[in-house]
Length: 437
Image (tube, rainbow, N blue to C red; front, side, top):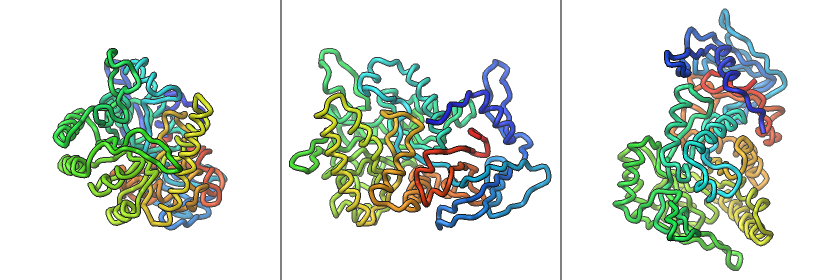
């Protein structure tokens, strides 16, 4: 875990990077705005051009205000520019996690959503966002607040206004689920009326209605639970679907009208096939994909987001040996299926499902994807280039190129040779503001 930086330190570093915070009249911290920003030149032993896999030695980046102006072995050093010598590290784009839960922390997920108030969970979410940023994740997609409604909208907006440190966020509010579905409070005494961790929608019409309400409250996309309780039987995955292809297609069409997309939690068939037929943006977890599903995902550019780290964590952190064994068997199955998906050319993005395990540690996902068959460069391209596209920021983040937002990190060694370098981030800049040095 990276060391936490007090917000005051964050603000001081922002000033050094050419961004200042001015106290508002009521004493609150005002949004950070560029004021006569001083250009910054970052110099390091290496720089990764992720689209080609080229390593520049040395590497420099010229940053002005929020954006990258030049990249190369050497760049222009404007008069008065601040030069940062970062040493024997590799400069690369800020990492992207396409599947996170800011409103979850390690422990019983169902109990924390019942026992902890939403205001308390917002405070914890702010701390989680800070931890993720300091670990090098400058952009993330929050895949459901687990019963906290549109509270993620407030966290996103506070980050955007410079009130708190954190990644760029795409948020969904609550996920959407059927009555008695994946995130309903099925294990509790019905007489207690324990609330679901998701918003109910039991038909295409209700899906559209819920999506409109969530959009009104500030959601960036819709997250839908497409499969329910998972079981392994005779070495095969069994997971019931929750929405038909026609129902998902109605949701996708409504998202298109709203100018956004749908992402689904879908472990296996036939739910994964229905999601691909409907044209969702991503199939998250994607443990079991049929040949037809994989073909559709290739043809439509639908990203699989494997989330290995959460599977590994659950395999080692369950309350009983039997539960851990079941999780281990599911992980083994997932790895075998992932190798088939790689061979079939399924497009991937990188998401860890962080929340049930500690925030700020999710670069483990990149390591696991390499262990299970991807080349380091392919994983970094999935994370950075595909992740930027999935979050709707393609051409703006995910690469070190002129005109892109200055989301830049530094890691030891060469990540193309050792992907675990991404777990040891030493420098973080987001939008020209230094968050860690």
